[in-house]
Image (cartoon, one colour):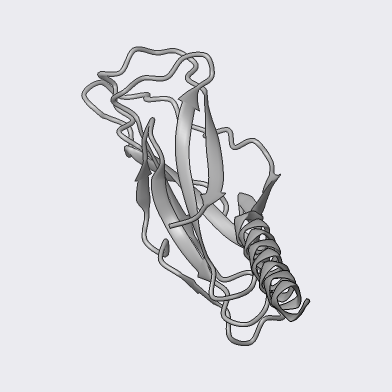
Length: 173
């Protein structure tokens, strides 16, 4: 009978360890990102004199986009990435860039937010914008301000309306 009690205890310990590992995986996998803000319409002045060009670079408001991001506990990290999608047309000579203009708000004392304070070119594939690290608690940041920049505006680009959608994602490193 003692032999069976030992086997039973070992099985319970293994099942408990397995369940704990599965819960830990679920906790680590739950990163969230919420995007708020409004459409940015760039006002490009008319050229009134022959031989002149546009200034070429335009910036949105410093908090054009506000992100809220959460990274679960237990030494976890989240990477916020960005890319654009033509909506429906975009000229490849135009360059979109984004940067983080502040840390936003958090109650987490030991959490950090790093990177992204200089403009990063936003392409068709994901580019890392910044990282959030949680140490012993949920790292939750709200109102992280994102500023956009449009460059490459020139008289050599055909006159048209160009639109794009900027997509933010959060994931593991």
